[in-house]
Length: 113
View: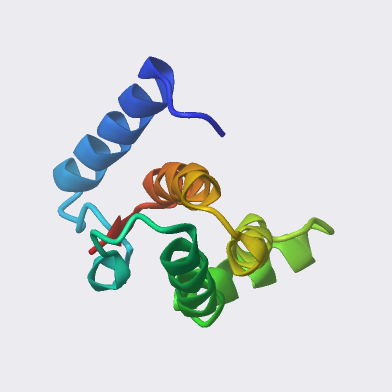
């Protein structure tokens, strides 16, 4: 799912509906920002990507998505992304995958901290 004006609008509307219902805006939290560094080398990016992939794979978000996907006879998007992260070797690839992560997080109401 690519970020677009429509996807941002849907995310905003979902947040407003949750606020109006007295629910928290975000269902889950994924803490990874502390793993990011100013080192822009591909070597550091590969290490960071593997670590983020491991954190993502072990998250409650991934577990819930795997169960949902299994019930629907689908593949887990979150698990697939974790696997892509574990194979990323360049900063450019890491940045692309982080964009994908943020888009999925917005759709699934996951706060990335």
